[in-house]
Length: 315
Image (cartoon, rainbow, N blue to C red):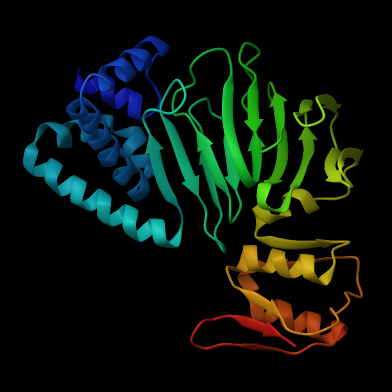
């Protein structure tokens, strides 16, 4: 298989015919699959190190591939960079046999968030604790991705290929728009806030479709999806490094703190503290101690941090 064709597949620029040809080629032998995986590893390592370098100088990757001593160095560097960055920022896993094409899975740990651009130009912001799956090359008549967590999408318009966000029980389908999605299977939680354009939400459990207009939000409440007008920027303020409070209970706010600050919080008291304000914002950059100190003044609780484990106990 031509190295240039494999490279185009890795960066998401292969044609549908080329992608299908490569997938068929990888299934013929383990050696072929390893060759593609190695090319992908070199690209991923360079991508994590410098996105601009890869996009602007593709000949650099091909040069590395063709020279064995450079290849060994690049693979070692890719593994090292992926290990270091994967522990502190996010992890990448590629499955070459899933669906009709290659899939990439990104998992964002607590306390981190990233912005990325998909092959079609769509921008995606991923919040902490999110698992996101997408194909580098879209095959067929749709652009389908999967999410468990929270993400903001700014979708590139393509009238011939709708963009579909698949979650544990609901699909959100658009042509070109900007919207935020929360879908957490473990908590049976779902909501989508539409900032621009129009979307269609499909409830697979109730066999129901709901159309959304700009500045509307759909939330799973009391066993069904409910639509209302969007209030302020709370659904997407996390992309600005903010924790927004909008009619949350103390327990719900602590769950947000765990997600955004990357900490574990244990509430060790019989009665939960009450929040004496309905709305507010905390900057993540100010740190968890600042946020808890501000809350202490009105909610009347104490907290301590275990120096060995880092766990915060509220009492």
